[in-house]
Length: 125
Image (cartoon, rainbow, N blue to C red; front, side, top):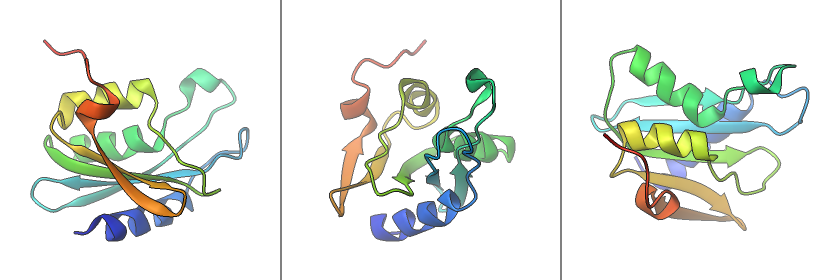
């Protein structure tokens, strides 16, 4: 699975986002270490604290299906801006893909960051 292909799958996921409050539609495509793909989109709520990001939606879907090890996740914003994962999402990634990679679109280019670059001191036990 190429980074470009994973970005395209994340774009499909963004079409399913529920973002009536921010109008910021985000999609994610998560690749398990054995090649399975899980899509996620952001799901907002009138109580903003109950909102779930696209990255966590994809990860939680995968975990609920028994997967625990992921290699990379692509994240895109439908409006074309760069959708860097929030701190909560990065910490969830730390739990399941500490050596993984985050794929983003930035200025019409695909860029790859290691999770360690984005969260150099993630919390672990």
